[in-house]
Image (tube, rainbow, N blue to C red; front, side, top):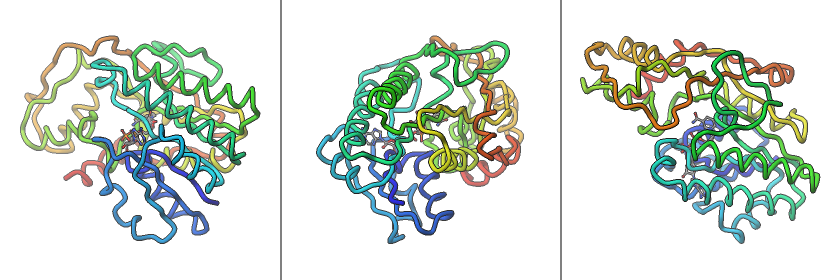
Length: 307
Ligand code: NAD
């Protein structure tokens, strides 16, 4: 199978490319990535020499390039996105452009080229916050920050191509990922660096916001499962059950790195900060997947990687 992976030089995309090359000898992979501040060829170190990998530096909004690459592929997995919530609060334009128009460009090409499968990588943030219980795939969308709103828009567009044109779309909605190759602006790598340097760790609000954390390798296995065995038109939540408050995550990092609790600094809360996300994951478990990494084991591996 020839797989077009957009955003394959970013955090999750690059881990997914390594996973495909390691696990599926017969697959060929084409990475399309614009190498924004968040993407790097370094993330594909070791894979770039593999004759089964082709790397194309380019933009998912480039209709001509996208058509050419999609025509040459069996399936598309769309990771490419502006992904940092704080940046979307400062300015939403690049988020609308890449996350919505980029997805539309890919969907149009997938339709024209009669692609076998289109996997849209989405997030738990499209559901908004949930104080008790867990979100199921049927729950309504209620995005509460500009990043989440653009991801929800892309989900709706992708679903509409499935309904209207019968394009074989599947959507994955994943909780917070962590692990190797994540950009240093994100919470876990940022706090590992700061903890190790003896700097203060800025915790939003009172640190009580809860996130569900999945080790990136578990997410890559789940996406792979959906790519091969998921049902067209379906949405799959990918959770872990590993819920932690931001303050718990901060303490765990300080413990792992050998920092001091005095390094914790409570700062003004993020605007519109969702209190809690949590996902039901019966559908993805029915495909024969379950998470293999605990938060603690994943954190230990992550700290080892960054240090
Ligand atoms: P990332 O920011 O690390 O990587 C994004 C990649 O997309 C980068 O390599 C960047 O260069 C590339 N890119 C950006 N704009 C592009 C464009 N116009 N054309 C081509 N390439 C472009 O993001 P990530 O954390 O790896 O997230 C990947 C996907 O997973 C995103 O769609 C994100 O919404 C989703 N997601 C992430 C998480 C998480 O915890 N990181 C959780 C749920 C869902």
